[in-house]
Length: 221
Image 1 (cartoon, rainbow, N blue to C red):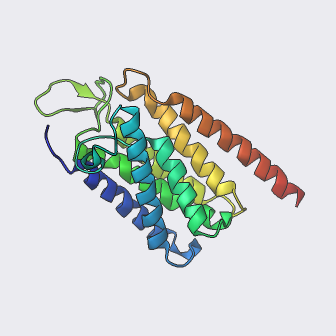
Image 2: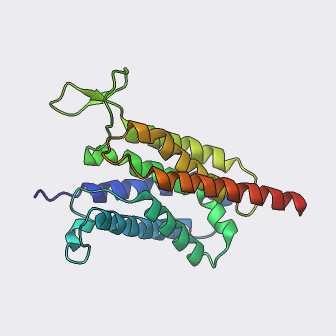
């Protein structure tokens, strides 16, 4: 078994991207944005990694080293819920604070996907498009699906940042757009089971329902 720190580098890339997001939208953020985003990202990555290990049949208690140094993935749904929950709890359950971090959080998620470059895990299904890439030593070119997702999430962050700052709207939009990006890119991923499409559909549906309810509520106020 080869010991690697590629997952850790990918996580650091995600945190660095989120930090850059807090610099871009600094004016709309509360005090200590870096501490908040780092703690939320760390909680999300830890919970997401544990969930992924359990899903793969790996005991996280007896295989603690696998949390950081073995090449592996992260359960995006579990990581998202944990990160949002941590941010909400550490912000005294103030939804407007969670809203303000929606765009930087999407940039951080884009950084996680771009971290595939550290893990040599960017490629998906076979493609002959001009920008398709091949693994070292292979002549078969494939979709750089993780980079597709990274670009999509950056675009989503720009869209979310332009949504009026009504409580809950940006959070709902960020959740929905993140789920949509994963749904759109899922067909290009290599997967025996088809990937966690169900959870992305659930996330998108909940975001649409929440967004519709919030828009209706704000119109009545």
